[in-house]
Length: 458
Image (cartoon, rainbow, N blue to C red; front, side, top):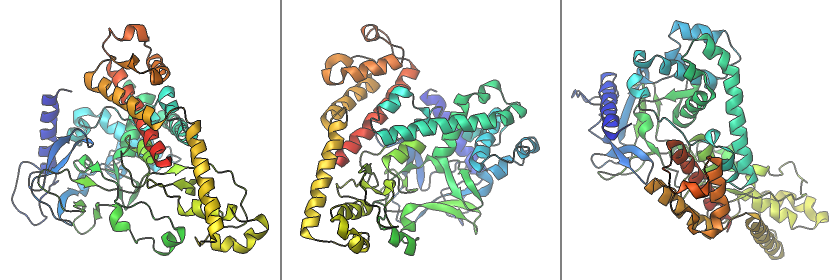
């Protein structure tokens, strides 16, 4: 899509949004407008911070209402199933999950073309996503870490399984052949995964026109580690995890500024604390600096002397290099003589310092294990930093040139070219296809993910 065509479609979306009541004006503002934005926000492009997003058109203060989207504008299961034909087909298959049904509803609306009430919104949805379910075998292996590879393979298997379960429904609805394909299903499910917002009446969430133009900002502080604190005060940090929600009194999804913004700044939406692997799996991007990232450590320690023994997913290194609360507790118990573990187990799992000797053993064990994990990885921080420079040059120039200049990454570059059906000796004289460039973007995400992980573990 050309920039001119995209701009025309964006203006059509904003005019449609104004017609259905989407606005960045206060609820009591009676000033009519042919466009939904312009008082608080404007669509802008941020090439190094999420691409298309929303910018402040004036200074905003924390707590300011910046956007309202009425319930009628939300694309939900409830709204789509008002179409009796779609509802009839889906009711015949009560085993389907809520997210599967919303994905079917999205494909059904796309099938309507200009006949869909949400057409101005649907035509501006991304044509491709970089969520893990879209990764090919090479891109998955480029993640290098077993846990990440397992998560990727699981995401692909789930997408295929969901599609097979729902294919009979899509066929009964007589959608266009193109929309029956696995590729279309992965696109629709990625749209649902990456763009839905929470609503209280449907656990599948909703697609929110204009509201999903906000790009993501990680909460300033990492997740609360102490599970006891989480249990005792579940809503302690709730205000930090979201900048919007559905409000019954106005029957609208409302968004608020969670900090002060200067005119021209990108207004961001914080919708939860996610590690980079979570973001890659569900949203298709990673953050260069993510305060909620985690480097998991497979310790394989026999310390199960308490019902409070931490689960594997609680054993990780934080971005600041410190061990998680659970990891530190587990290591302190490991460093305790076996015949004394039962006596001090409750202290270790409470996070108590046991002794200077114990703490020294813990730090030595942690440093040794981190070094071992890093040594087993095929590449180093320096390798990955240089490889990212190469990939960025290829993305910027739209060519294959320069791939052979660095011997350290030749094998990986050759693997990437082969995965895309290209030979190194002939690639320099050919122009890359759109499919090649999308794969290049996903490869960059894999390298960027492992680069961030290695920095955390170092």
